[in-house]
Image (cartoon, rainbow, N blue to C red; front, side, top):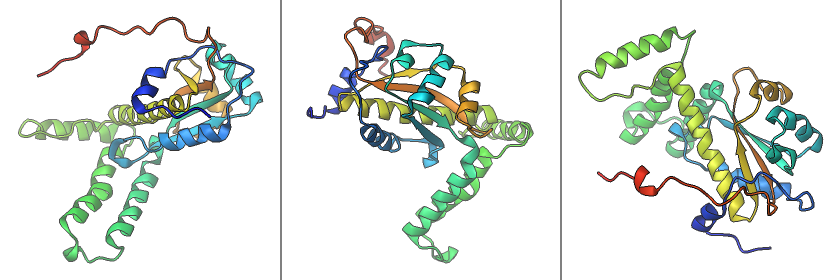
Length: 245
């Protein structure tokens, strides 16, 4: 067992690996541990609107591979992880946060006796989250957008309240979890490749995902071969992307 890498070492080690070694298997339990690390990723309002489908079945990988256009990263993968956005679960997740607040502050504290922190937290998940996520055929989102636009003339206000805005929020959140996963895998000397090139509709049907679920990305897993990394890492010069104000 190799010594686990530091965060900096793992970030440097991580590459998008396109070809994995067919002779070197990876332990599904280790991949699951890395997904537990993925679940610790920062996310919007702690709503955790994600699910992780850990594919270890060779037959399912074989079915998904052509839906990823037969990319080598899918074709040679030992395992796959499908990162799924579940914006449709916002009510359930908000309720889970409110239940957690009961364990922190007590379930039956009279409103007059609640601390300011408790009032803010309960108001956030009980009123603000429903305001942000509630939707009806795009109509409610349009009126929310008009309302915050008018209020925004007079003071700073959160403006991402339309259905399309909240979809972006949840996908950003899921992307953070995927990054946590890939860095955790790299720390253990395992390799990954995030794949956006796929027929997400067919994969969604294959995995029997519910209507409201959306695939964020598919990450292949394995151990790299010498040909698995396509050349030296290229990045735009840092001074072109770094701005200090």
